[in-house]
Image (cartoon, rainbow, N blue to C red; front, side):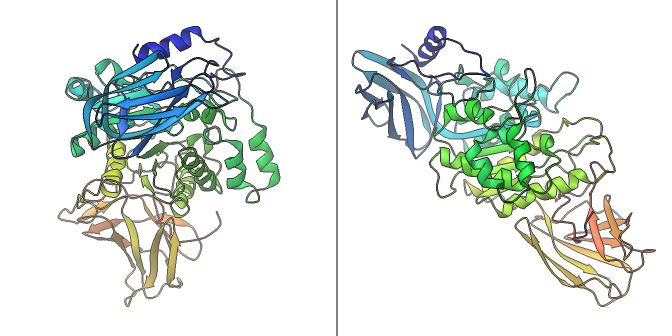
Length: 522
């Protein structure tokens, strides 16, 4: 009996309860493997990979792996759950995994050893390779035409269960080849991330996808870690508001724990390399504590996977530039600033920047491939040791030099894991110079007038920011402050949406923060 048939039989025989009230549980006494273990699955290479399921209490269960011809045994506990850890080799396959209990047997076929990532968030992670209705994604046709070439080396386990108030043991999903029919409705960011990894590493890549459009961050962790992340750090009344939210039918998840229960818990512990996360629009108002909740969520996930040392990588995308009702408003920039603050408090984390990839009129921008490639660059550099020469992560300012006649106070600004020195030059020349780090061959594109940069603003002692002309000169940017008395602060792209264009020589955007040199209250 194949794993796919086991899963199908389980869901056919189990009583389907209302997802808002009860969760899928393994049928008591029935021998089964967890639903994430099916034909065509990908197991993380060179690790101790857990395999688990359920059986009658006291039943001995044996797991045999064809790659090393070893047998691993466990006994079902009081709750019927059994688990073994199997040693996985370097990437390769196909293999078989055989699970036996008394006279029953499950054979998992076409198992590959490779790299596994969990990809989730809200709608910009959910948006399919082929886009949403009326909202296209660039590269869709090419991805569909290329799908036959990559279908067996990219495999997808897509979780689409409803919200749940209690942790779910099983989900009605199976591992699938990423052929055109699957790619058609697969997360564009997740798929192109996997595609780049398999091209760069030459191994099979498995992606577990489970995003839900419009979901807040709170549903993706349990209450314990939500409280741990913000209790005592935000007003008690605010915490009460968060904890009092309840789900409504046909609405995006808002209640603490419902996505943790429905879409994370069923794959809890499945061996993987890390997580990629694209979420935040639903939490845009939480500009003083989203970073703390994101750190709490990551700690919750790592605890679920038994990762006490932070070895599972966590990479997230900044929310997309968009009007959000008022393009000139700075709320998104402050939120992105807070998102990036989490780099200081989440070990082994990184960010993909969307600054030049947005769409003023559409919250779901078409340019998903550059986001996926930034995620891939982070993973290739940090997790797989491939030195691309492009650096890892985004470009950022390392020095900002104000004119000699500025009253700015020199010093060091440290936030979001980066240090930026504020200096005063020797000349009173109405010019601010910004030096950029982690930009490979510099930023911008030089023309006969040097590379024009849009999106910079400078404020004087009146604290009113005004647009200024700026040009790139390799690894630095020069800002023309003519007409601004006593220039004291620089901001870049500090709006919900503006026509900013600053990228590194390999196309990685520069974020609005840590570019902000001031600490003025808004």
